[in-house]
Every structure is written in structure tokens, then in C-alpha cells.
Length: 225
Image (tube, rainbow, N blue to C red; front, side, top):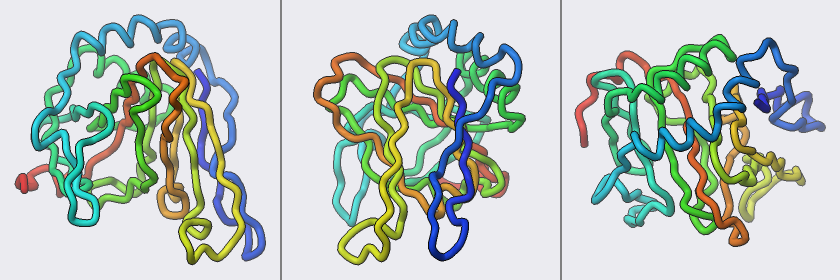
């Protein structure tokens, strides 16, 4: 399994480094998940129930849009996660999600109590540029992202290189997320870098992405909006 971890985004006032560096394998757990990727994909296709109706929509600048992909949330009992104007309640862990969660914990050394699942039917499904900086997220915990299915480009863009008021010329960082790969986003990635999964019309096959997170205990009993 390809594993990446965030580097320091700032070295000094004049230099910006990449948000990622590749890690060497530590044992056989990564290779085991890679070998099981096809089977895990099929099991998730059978087990995961995706959101519909209002839960399949997001709010951006006061306007409501259909999400350009399918989404589902699973995790420990009572956990909720609010983003883009929608609060989602965690469904109980399925056997396959528990297995993947525990495997990710063995690889990374971090524990997770929640997972956001995105299913992209093909290259027209996508994810806009954003940061995972919601108040529910434990700032000391990384976000671990597992990719299954079609390989897709994952783009990082520095916050100072966005929009008309961008202050620096900082090149975007592209990572190809392959079938069975693991991406580990450590703090402060989501402070300095936005990320997106752009449209790739030549991609005809589906992809499932699982982002394992740690929700703060104080947010466990949050009421749905």
C-alpha cells in the first residue's frame, strides 16, 4: 500500500515545501490490504448504504446543491459530523469497515471513531476544493484516507495561492491515489493546504474513498440541525 504523510508546509518565509513525503513500508500490513483491495471493494459495495434526500445535498454560500458523488457516514454510536451545512449521524460500523479501520490503526498507530465514505461512479463525479477543518475534528489526529477502485488525481493547493488575492506563486501538488492506497494527512495540512478530486472524464470505473477521522468526545452528543 502506498503511504504518505504530511511534511512541514512552511520552512521559512521564502520557501514552501510539499505537503507530502512518501514513507517506507513497516511490515506487511500495507501489502496485505493492497492484496485484499478487490475483495474489500466488493464487500463495501454490498454493505454500505449511501445517503439520499436532504442528506445527499450540501450548502455552499447559502445555496443548496446535490453532492456530485454518493456519501455515507459510519462510526461509534451517537457521533455526528457537520460540514457544508448538513449534520450527519454515524451509522453502526459494518464488519468490513471495522476490519479496514483496525488495519489502518495498525499501520498508522492512530485510532479512529468515524469514517466518511465517498463513492464516485466514474470520472464525472468529483469533490471541490476545501479543507477538513470542522470543529468536531480532533486537531491532534490525522485523517487517514483509503482509496479503492479507479485511480484518481488528488490535488493540494496552498491557501496563499488561491483566488484573485493570492500572495505567492506556489505550485499545486498532485498525488495519484491508486487502488488499495493509504494517504495520511497530518496536522497542519488542513491549515495551509486545500484539497480536491477534480473531474476526469476519461475515467469510466467507480472509486470508493474512506476517510477515517477522530471526532471529539464533546461533539458526540451534538443535536442534529
